Image 1 (cartoon, rainbow, N blue to C red):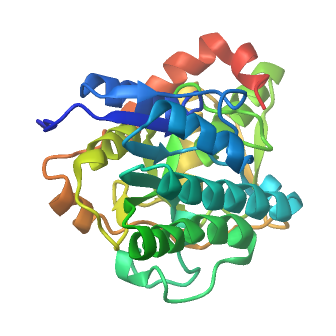
Image 2 (image 1 turned 30 degrees about the vertical axis):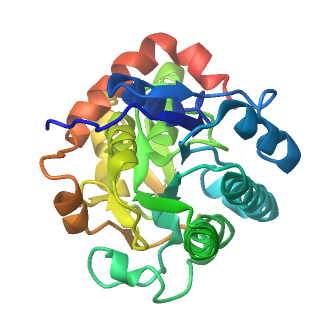
Length: 319
């Protein structure tokens, strides 16, 4: 896909040293933008006066907001208040500071967790407000939905433009692989590789394996976010994914095969499954970003394992 920009903008990426953020920084640089990606000691999203000072001193035209406090089912169960408070506070401070400091646009990184729990078929942008969250992701999902409310409120009152991209499950190199904070794919890779090192003959996984999930390689998600900088303001969110669902059981089998695990896969049905099906309708994405085609899961998994296996010790120590 060919993509060009009309002007050299100064772009600020929050969370620019993180799993997704560093890829956004790279993609923005590749497109010719001047990119700022301050660490928290330089720009504190929890401190609005510190944030406004940084914006006034550096004058970014666009902010891509990828900073977030997140994790898997474990953190969703044990830290719902922290998930809600930390993400909501960052969002509230960011939009207020951006509006007061002359920022032209904010591109927000949304999450499929913000969708209602019960959606027939793939989740369309038209389903976004049509139902309640699944209880396992209520706190995190609501904190991400608030981003879209903030975008629309600040556009109406201050003219602050925005786009809200809803990402499906991410995976890729440099992810967090600790069980408490990891994404689905990273969690399975670590668990399987650990059991292989111990010589285990079976691996027990949470739930019954039936829930379907969708996965997008982190580099592809970053490309879409970087390209959205030149989009017109849009009140409607845009799904970013592959539109392809994979059951957790199928995912476990694929990871096991790629790691060479020959033992048995068992399922602990006393553990929660989470949402039964979470797959995005990406027809709007195809219209907004014509020619944008994320790589296959198999290709992305090979890239991930090629990085993870020789860097396992360092990757497993991250939190």
